[in-house]
Every structure is written in structure tokens, then in C-alpha cells.
Length: 141
Image 1 (tube, rainbow, N blue to C red):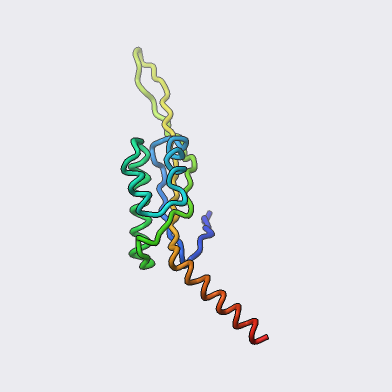
Image 2 (image 1 turned 180 degrees about the vertical axis):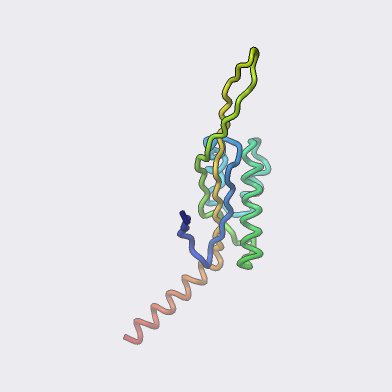
């Protein structure tokens, strides 16, 4: 099955991290703090927060910014985090050996993290272009 994403092709880029070994609840605690903030502010927040989830999220934010710079040519100073979500992944099941040939099950939860960055300077230019086209259509009709 092909996953389709509704992302504005011109102003947004994303990075997706799958099967990250931490619970979705613990990752959401950090994601809720950075949603809607600028790229530079997000980096400062993630470096100062004392949670283990910050490292994985910081790597994803760096990756999304690198995608924005390399693939689309966006400037890092004009990026904001438009969407950040955490979904539950599969549960990794292992067996811990115990005495007398027995074993206890170990369940390790994973999560999928998606970070979407939006270029606000380009978004403003598109809005200006749309209003100019709209105004020209009104004059011609």
C-alpha cells in the first residue's frame, strides 16, 4: 500500500523516523513543547531539555532542515515547525531467560515521529502572488 501525504509541495519538507525505541507517550511530552516554534528556537529547547526523547527528535529536526536546505534551497532562519506528530509503532517482543529453563516476556514499545518544517518567507510570497492574480482577474472581468 502506498502512503500518500498531503503536504504543500512548495513550502514544506518533512523527516520521518520510524521504529524509535521509546514509548509514544514520552516522545509526545517533548513534541508538544516544540510544535509551532521556529527552527532555531527548537534547537535551543531540545538541547536544554533533560529527556531521552530529545536526542532522537533533535536528529529528526536536523534532518528535516538539511532536506529543506539541500532539496528545496530554503533558508534555515525562516523555517518553523508546522506539524510534529508521534504515532505508536510495533511492540518488540523478546524473552528474558530465567532459572530452570523458563523465560519471561519483555515488551519494548516503539514509535514513529514525523517532523514537518514550513518556510514562512516563501509562504508569504505565494500569498502575495495569489492576491495579485486574483486582483488581475477582478479587473479583467
